[in-house]
Image (cartoon, rainbow, N blue to C red; front, side, top):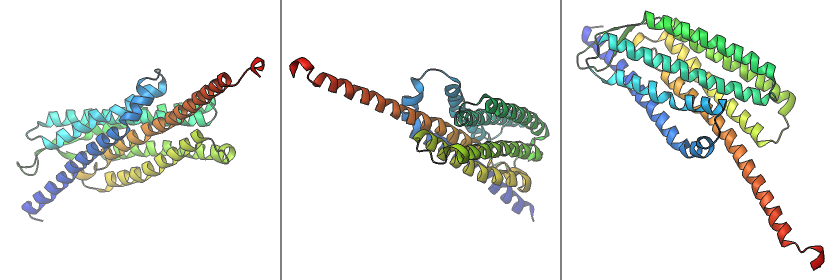
Length: 288
């Protein structure tokens, strides 16, 4: 392969990464617009709680690290040091956002278990181990990463020349293993307890949970395969997409659950109002 051919190949790979960052930001903004009204109704006026805090952490953290990556791929003449700083900021934002998203899954599983404290302690312990492992692996990857000049002065953005992909791939594999453990447990609960349930909240939690796991499993597997087999400029192609997907799916779990509870509350209030109206409309014994 000639130098010009190699330059064109690297340029096309960098362009693919750049376009993927644009796609990720577009998906995030589009979903935000779709669910903003639900967020206003169900979250903004509610009391502060652990679930509400996790919702906002998961919901808004991509607004930080996704634009950072897009910026690092579009701006020219960035120093290697600045590229490393931008990569670190994005990486830590991803760790934070995905940790919050996984914590939402723990709350969902805790609710389905009938608020079994042992379930909460067990999965919280697994979550803590996973977060610590992700922090260590992320730091090791950042230490192994290096940047160099782009293959052509006309190509914008940072150019990652090396980075040990085993660290991020291991981190994402840990997340997938955690999700698989949670899904196996919730499937067992469904088979043993809720298989014949007609409760709308239970059905919604399971529907969203299975959808979450199916999509995350597919994209996580694709991401790990890409990290381990693709060349350096494109081996992180699906990292941010997976991170955005975690944010969207986990926050929708909370929004859908709260919407069911909101509708049930409204139906209860309407039923009470109808009973009060009927009691006033019914003649008393003296009038009969």
